[in-house]
Length: 408
Image (cartoon, rainbow, N blue to C red; front, side, top):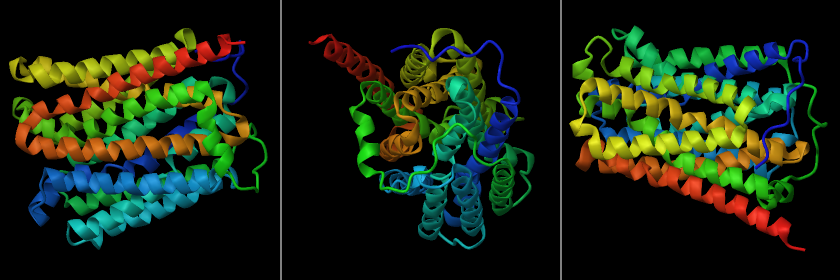
């Protein structure tokens, strides 16, 4: 897999400001994603929810996200309307549905409905945010997407920080805080708009062209690596508070507690993304993506079979490394996919890749949260096959590409 195109010696004037604005808006918008997980203790007290119920709420978000990304890609919507318009409308809708979850839902069933609608809205935030990055800075996709996914990671961790800083507040106010941030993200993108580096929006149907992306060997290789990564990522993020509690880390670090430790472990991924983005400029996106995938898979393996023998300090260090590496490959796989596609189908191709990846997360989240009830922290062994399959799938796709080009 060739490295990314070399960047010009001097950055284009003002490129950092639009990328930074999109990244901050992504941070605010994606705070909606795990707002329910940050309120897990409140839900357990108010509704008698357990770990499996929290998994249901997370899976409801994933289901909505999958349906939304499928609609955006297969109906050609992602490339038919301005990216900034889709982002703003989605962030406002997500803020509304998230607030409804906090103040209208009365049980897990009604909560899952509103979380599904939040996921539907997130489909217009995450992949469209990546398209906005490409629209402003196509020559530095790996580095710029690393910043974007770093903000996604902080957005995922942010509700835990809100829970830590507002422990005396009812859980509904913590969730509502995420809605306020999403509205702020919508305002930022409304003021910024869409960048100049995309072709005009096309009016025809996008189904055939979007699905044809998987016929491109480079896209297929990065997509397979991404799918293996996704098996692990969201299941890990879902059970981080459970791991912190069940492994005794919360008792070992009482000042941080479950919300503080959960925030630190998930937010470590932002540093991993930024480091991966910097390394991608020297090593290329493929090397960074595969390296991070191997490290996160190794962490899952070590934790699954050795967590009981580790001291609290080493256990926390392992989880921090895992948190940093588990997301660092994501922007690089997305950069590889974006570079492999024709520019006029980037939005749809990234959306369909996201849809398939998040469908995989629903399976892994359901399985690992159900298994956690009987096995405890040892249930993370179920995450190991994801990185392994991603590494093998990527290599096989690259090998097939090389074999195909070698034939007359």
